[in-house]
Length: 331
Image (cartoon, rainbow, N blue to C red):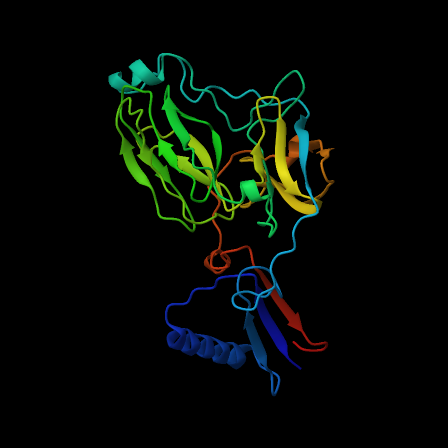
């Protein structure tokens, strides 16, 4: 009888293997003491380098097969039901605000953007449709991140845009159009924390660098104006789109074949905030595939939150799996 613990497609980083081994052995011994262990029980741990389960990496690895061609996917994400009307986060006049903030933040109401639905077509804004994993055969002209910077602005005490997708290595500049100081504070899992004051009317921008892809969008807040919140999603590929005010999206240059997509929204359920996992879409060569998506009101959480994951999960840096198998009759 044997059990297997297998981590697939991961970069599991342990700084002190000897200490980790002692701790693991001690933990297993304690477990056996209280729960009982079968004789000759055997646990096998296999760590496979990032790049896909069973995929060869490093010297001697087979080159990725060229795509047969490329296509695109378009669609509309809609909200089923009557959307809730939320009061503004800051009303006009801004009772309770400091005078200098009131003069900037309360000239117009600051809207609650956690669930933005177009009343005409029920289109859902600020959802992200993204390829679950970086494909090996990215379209050549899209293989490198764009050199043109992306701008993340602060205007009227709001972050603009509310949801931002950026590629790893693409320049990202934090700017401000407000005559008061703001603070941009990210909450990454894999990247360095960014927590800096942004000077009034700074149009040159402060660089915010993402060197690694994140497992999901990360919350961005302003510690000086606590209602301000947005999301950044650093990815290591170009295949993602944020729905516009009408709920529409388009992703171009996808390799032909069937791909697995995820759909995220800040009011999505659970820590992942995913409306849909592993959505299968087939892309045909030189064709535009249409995929419309509809989600019931009950799908959306009452209040968005900053996702928090277990430490062990965070260590599976590239979306790896933990597979535990048990022989028949083993307890």
